[in-house]
Length: 108
Image (cartoon, rainbow, N blue to C red; front, side, top):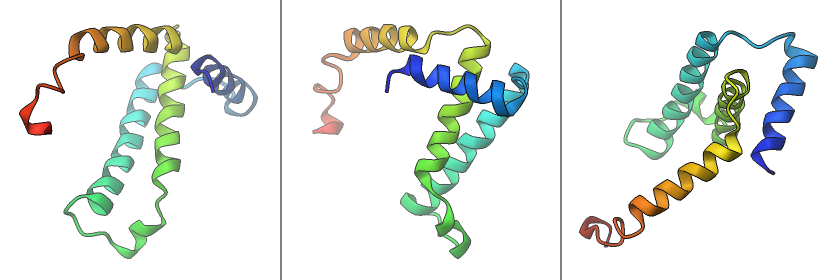
């Protein structure tokens, strides 16, 4: 699904169900909270921290989708075209790192 479509879906959802966008700082705090939920799952399920029985109910995919939703809301309310930003960043990343990881002895 193109990022433009995701941005449109988030905008339509907020208009229909969310009444309005939360302000940018509130959304930043919500994004931080959602990333924290992803971090909790990663630390306990894939890291060295022990996983509690109650942690097993957390769905990593759902939490990543929450991150994407709030991230998209922030992009929408600040006028960012995520597709254009993504394309630009991938081009820059490719130019910067085209040989870097292949030459990294730690990755071999």
